[in-house]
Image (cartoon, rainbow, N blue to C red; front, side, top):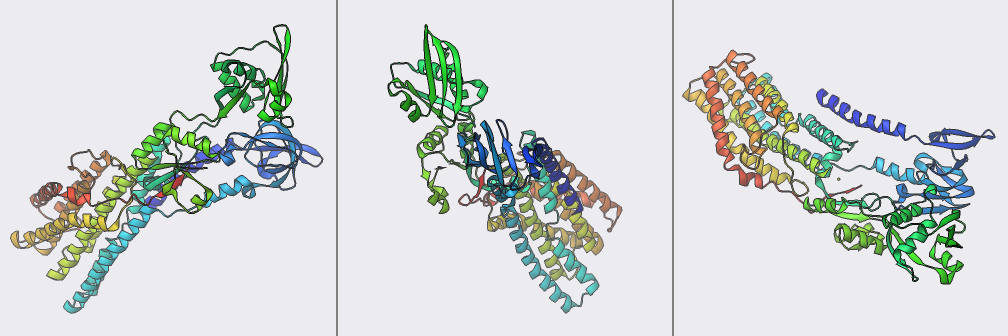
Length: 612
């Protein structure tokens, strides 16, 4: 438990340190009027009532009500939409948005978690979801404890009838219960998810909660924001529709003339990029330029072309049409370009059994075009549909998966192994005592068995595994049946070992208990390798730490048994025969395990929604 605590603390501490470094680099400052003068202060020091000034390039430090001036802000961090929003006197300017144009002074109305953006961030921060893996394993543990409870009652009754000393009976009962509890589970899970987090970090993904890796494995629908996730967070010219005799290229030339890169206006940048790509050149020398003004909703340029002066205006269609109804050349359609990797990502997620649902604030026609282009679908959901949770009937609403599933497979191996060993050990110890009236092994050796097995099972966190092609969700019943099918042959082997040692080899009780201990350690190791691979156990190579842990385990146990350390000594030949017999039985089980492990099925009907 100390090992697990230290490991968790170190791994999650590293992630938090990385986040703290990012936060320090992204610290926001604000121009605030205090004590009769303007000051530059940390945004965390703002309070409602402060007077703050923002200009081009600033991140709005708090929720403001504009008192003077006007700005165009990018609110994509709040809404997901890259189109600018004009904010004039009396309008609200929200924390987290970026000023693209203009200057304004406003009064702070909310700060921190009370802001529009902060409220959303706080909901995300405090959102909790029950771990499906944890729930499943705890149900398994309760089932195993139920089995132990029945055995304990039977053993206590037998002890009362046969007058077994309480000093021997109670420690045995305690050890029997302890053998059921998955003490190594927290450490194994932390190791597995920590290594997964390290793998993701190398790919540029920062994991702040280790449990998030495991939950990614069970994810079924994935709700993705359109802007910035499926599409790029910028505008581009997607179509040009001339309304006069001019060509598309000529329309782009005139639009570019009324644009200016210096303003960093996203519409201007989109037009200039399109004109440059089309090879459009300026029709003349620009004599003057008036940047876009929110009050007039247009920009203007004056050109000297062919001995004449040409005035070009670019802006909202209704505004331009009102200036010169007969001189309107064309409409430029703007949109967010799709990220080059989006269609391939959607297709890959589909192969993994994950249905991508697009969430956007755009109009339905716009959303439909994007959804179809990336292969998401065409079914639209309304707000009412979302509230009714009809997510299975929609494709869009107006990624870590592979790593998570590898972690899940490692934990599946651990859980199957734990159930099988608990069935075997608990029934063998309990029934053995009830049948013979003697302890088939001692509490001390059971304790050593726990240590020997747990350090090897923790090495499962490093195992080389694949991942399933569908979301992983387990059934306790199918898990238990599969594990029981593996445990029953080992249980029979355990009784056979005990009987042969006592009646064929004629060993006394203490040496028999030693051989039983060696057998339990060896069968525990064999079970791990049997359940880790659905194919033949040699079909894939286990990780080096796993092989090293197993080898060290068997060597140490052999030395303890043959030297008589903490147990009665037995000949090396007897130990070798037991190990060889375990290997032979394991090979036999390997040929019949396929149908047994195939019963471990996943439920893809119910998944954990995840949002990015």
